[in-house]
Every structure is written in structure tokens, then in C-alpha cells.
Amino acid sequence: MIDLRSDTVTRPGEEMRRAMAHAEVGDDGRGDDPTVQRLEEASAERVGKEAALYVPSGTMANLLALLVYCGRGDEAVVGSESHILHHEAVGASALGGISLRSVANDERGRIDPAGLRDVIRDPATPPRTALVCLENTHNRCNGAAIPLESMRGAVEVARAAGAAVHLDGARIFNAARALETDAATIAALADSVAFCFSKGLGAPVGSVLTGPREVIDHARPLRRQLGGAMRQAGLIAAAALYALEHHVERLGEDHERAARLAGGLAALPGGVLAVASAETNIVFFEIDGALDGVEFRERLATEGVLCSGTGPQRVRMVTHLDIDDAAIDAAVSATGRVIEAMRAA
Ligand SMILES: *Cc1c(COP(=O)(O)O)cnc(C)c1O
Image (tube, protein in one colour):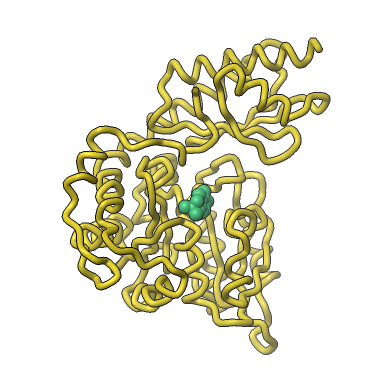
């Protein structure tokens, strides 16, 4: 199977498994796991923050930031296409009593500063806008890498209003690669930054929340409240450390393959697909309105290619560690065959 559903589907390779097998561990619930501590230090350093907290998922990392910066009845502004709004089961509202207010993401994931200013509350009347959340790369907006200038515009508005800024940087290293900068430069624009080891970095589990030490100190007991304090977590942290050391520099390969995929799909005979340009490792395309997306995905699966969809015609394919050039070419050919068969039917 060529699995392009997400970069979360990667499985640990031999060397990563070896690092896991030999990890030095302890009870992290008591602060005794040296591998988790090393991972937290390395993560904070990578993005230029004071401290970090290892958590089971990106969703928990984002939720912790929301819980730290917002009290019950406070409001957080999130992008209209953000992962926090669409894919995290509104934990902030359900568990934290936090109102999520959205501001438009344009098709490239950007937030217009004037639009942001419009949704920030008047300080005289509750709710208070306590936090603004940004996302980079932007998952639902074609995996776009948001340029620093664009982020800066939104950050200035947030700061002028006295709101903190959290960056959902699940794929911050993909953003850094695409923007030809480093993750710390992007992270410097936000107070706290979450990123995932389990996406393109290829670790089996885990994410991290990074930020000022007082924020992380505040997040730690909240992680316990959420059930996210783990025990000999060094076993999985070792995989994350391995990923941080070995799989960041290679992300450019995934971007090249995504571009190759997008180019191949766009060049299918008859120009049957509307393909968004691939800025990072995520490719979205639209199939013909007369064709059914569910049927398309099912037929493609029988050809040995898995993809995901976010609308009746919108298809997503994501490149990652376990996808090579041959897999890309095979995926393009299979897509061509399926589309042709569906149009003929
Ligand atoms: C995957 C992802 C998350 C959450 O990660 P999980 O580990 O799946 O909870 C958050 N934000 C973005 C943009 C993501 O792509």
C-alpha cells in the first residue's frame, strides 16, 4: 500500500526502534525520566524557548496553551480553517470554558491583520480576548507555509490588544524549510509553540509544548489533570529525540516529492484535476464535480493508494518518510487510471 493519507502513518525504522530499546527511563510522573528531560531540553532549544513539556498529542499541546493563557469565560481567536477549530473536538470549550472565535484564513492560510483587529473584543466588556492562535504550516490551507511578514502582522495586532500568541506549529520544521529560515525564527513571533514528533518527523507518538518557563510550569499540573502525565515515557521520547536529530534535515525531500506529485497530477491527460501548488508536504486537489469523492478514494485504494478527503470533491495526499519517488509515480498513474475509469462509467 502507498499510504498518502497523512504523514502520521509513518512507522519507526530499525534505528529509531534501537534508540527506543536502549532508552534510559524513569517515572516521568515524578520527573525521573532522563530521556524525557533530554527531549524537553532539546525541543526547547530547537525553537529557542526556555522550556518544553512532552505530551501525548499535538491536540493536548494546543489545549494546554489555551488553558494556560485563558481562564473560563475568556476568548481565544483561532483561524477559520485552523486545526484547533476543526479537528480537536473543541476541547478548549468543553474542558476549559473557553470561547473560540474565528477569524478568516485566506486560501493560503493567512490572517488579515485588520480582520483580526475586528474580532478582538473591547477590553471594557467581557469576554476578554486572551489569546490569538496561529498555525504554520497550515494544514487545511494546502499545507501552506505562512511567511514571517504575514505572521508578524497578526502578532502585532494581538500584542497591541494585550493578547498572548500561541503557534500551532505541528509542522513548524516543514514551515522553516519552505520559508528558508529556522524554526526558532518562526517561533520567536509567538509566546508558546506546539509541535509534533508524530507527523513528518516520523516518531510513533508525541508532541511538545514550548514557551517561557512560567508557562510550562503552569502547564505541567494541567497536563496531569488531562491525564497526560506518563511514566516510563522515555521509551517513546527516545523515538522523538531520534526524529529531532535525524529527520528534520530530510524534510525537504518530502517537499520535493509533494511538488512532483502535484506536477504529475496536474499533468494528467485532459487536465481533469484542479491541483493546488505544493508548498510543503501536503497536496490538495479537486476532482470533477460530476465524480464522487468517496468512490474515488475507494477505487484508488483498490489500486493500492490511500488518500484522505475533506469535502465531497477535495482530496488530500501527504508525503512522508515512507514514500519514495517510485511511490509518487505509482500514485499519479493510479489516480489517472481511476479518474479515467470513473469518467468512462
Ligand atoms: C496533527 C495536527 C495537530 C494535532 O496533532 P495530534 O497529535 O494529532 O493531536 C495540531 N495541529 C495541526 C496543524 C496538525 O496538523
